[in-house]
View 1 (tube, one colour):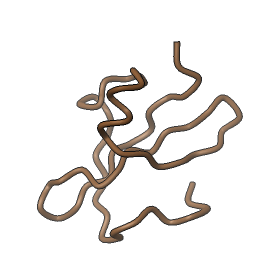
View 2: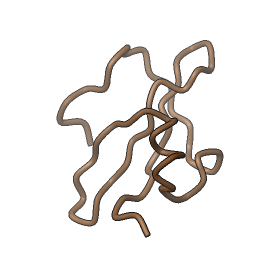
View 3: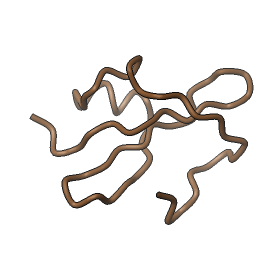
Amino acid sequence: MSEYTGVRREVLKDGAIKHVVIRDAGGTEQAIAAKDYISQGILPDLNELPEVSTENEFPVAGKG
């Protein structure tokens, strides 16, 4: 069982997933690649996460 929970997937204007934001039990959020989210078996399923638009190419530090 994963110690992380998926929060949202952030997508670019073209619909490509830029990264997935996950949260640990302490409430700290971090961004990871969608392929890593899937391979680590983090829940909920990637397709069930809310989708949020982002114009930033990279995750913004301290976001959350």
